Image (cartoon, rainbow, N blue to C red; front, side, top):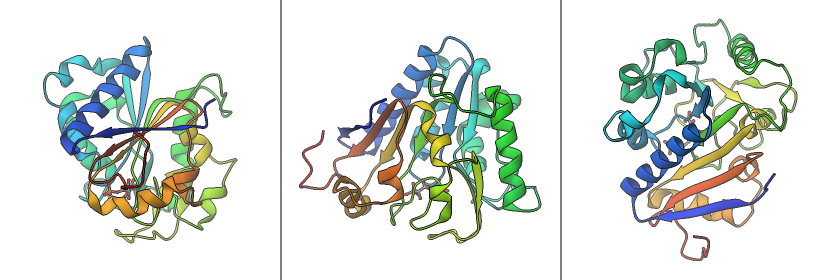
Length: 246
Ligand code: 6PG
């Protein structure tokens, strides 16, 4: 296990999305069997999702053997535009992936707690065990984004979800940022169970919070790590001037 965070600098958002697509395809290719990708919400991955539905990327993905999960969800109906999986479905999954390979968080459940339990069972059934084995990661790739307060997935600073070690998925009553709706999120050990965790950070409005992460402040996005590789794709606009990581 490497605790190091690798930072890769890209000139702009377009190059960053291409680099992310290449890394995603490389992880799928490295797994000759059933591959699992955990997607993220927010605006950062939109460009990547569009690319995946576009040639030459679309043709390079063996869609039948790739399963798509989501790291966190806003507790709004599946057709609501704020729903994270709805965004991924609209941008690439619905036109490319077999429906049975798309695994949304069940927001139709009565409460975030029920939705979390049901998603936990879905993940454990897919994995074939209720215990995560460090030698056998759940996901090939986990995509992540960086929020303005240092949150990632729906793990917000100071929230109890951040300290959860037993549950794979939990409900979060209050979000720190818009949209201010309850959330459901995978927990740190679940997100860590991957061969690669890949952050996409782009644009000047991310620079201040990225500086805080790189300075080592205790924020959710600073804490989260893969058991395998943790890679941050950062474009020039987002990279703090004092940073020497590239
Ligand atoms: C969500 C996300 C969240 C997101 C960050 C960054 O549900 O909102 O999963 O963790 O990744 O807030 O969001 P942007 O990409 O929109 O900046």
